[in-house]
Image 1 (cartoon, one colour):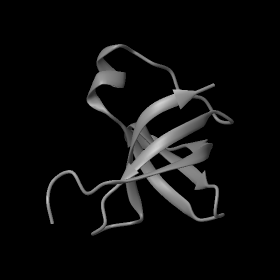
Image 2 (tube, helix red, strand yellow):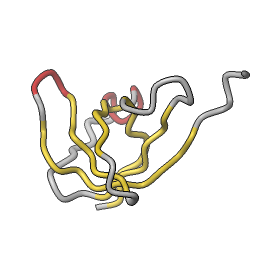
Image 3 (tube, one colour):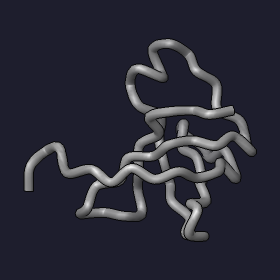
Image 4 (cartoon, one colour):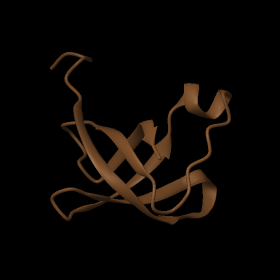
Length: 72
């Protein structure tokens, strides 16, 4: 598999966890632990519970993702 094979899904932030992680509920009712991507961290984009976010998932581990976009 190539590096470009990422799965993008939308979800809603349920809870802020320790260590900069977030608990996100996807549109299909699954929950995923996610962290903020580097560009969002550098630009200090705040993510609060209730925000709608776009997450990138790896096909290898569907329980962990990376938040790449925030749609308040």
